[in-house]
Structure formats: C-alpha cells, structure tokens
Image (cartoon, rainbow, N blue to C red):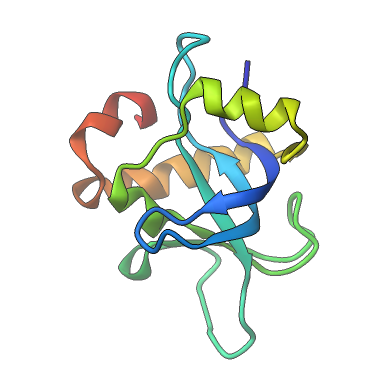
Length: 138
C-alpha cells in the first residue's frame, strides 16, 4: 500500500486540465485508508531560475518550494499543488497497473517534517481544492 509523501517516477503522467502526457516525478498526498482507495498525487518540476519562490508554501501560486538537497530532490523543486484544483485522482487499479508495467517506479519518500509542512500548505489552499478530496487530505 502506498504512503503519503512517497515519490514515484511516472513515465506517462497526464496533466488533468491540459491532457498532455509527460514523464514526471509525482508525490502521493492522501492518507490511504483502504487498499482500493483512489490516490491523490501531484507532479513536481525543477524550479526555473527566472522565478523566485519562498521556501515552503507559496499559496498565491499553488506551489510548495523545496530547496535543493534539503530532502529527496537534488535540484530546487516546485511541488505543483495547483493541480489539486482539478480534483483528478488515480484509481488504485490504474496505479497498480502502472507499477506492474514499470511505467511508474518508486523512487523514495519525503522526510516527515517536509510532509508535515506540505500538508499545512495544502490546508492553507483548502478553499481551492474540491471538497470531496478533503477527507483524504486533512
């Protein structure tokens, strides 16, 4: 069973609003209560040097910023929380299918303190996240 804060490399991540497919690192965000529960995951991207973010929650733009080498990521990284607005989840069946076909690969897990800060940021964005996701995130 997957855990909140786990990081996977998804070779066929589909952006919910755009529909384009790309290879992306993703982070699992929800608390898993049942083995058949849908999974809430968001992509991460290397931060562009032209943009300046505060460390941690950047609520106005829906980004959680992680500095290089402070946790799992070796580059400055943006966790794209704005994707939560779409309400899209991955079914457990689809998730397992991707793992079995090796189109999704486990890479690691965030440190506990990073997960706590990330969840706090998600809580600050609560009004922008579909209500049906709330019980699984908070």
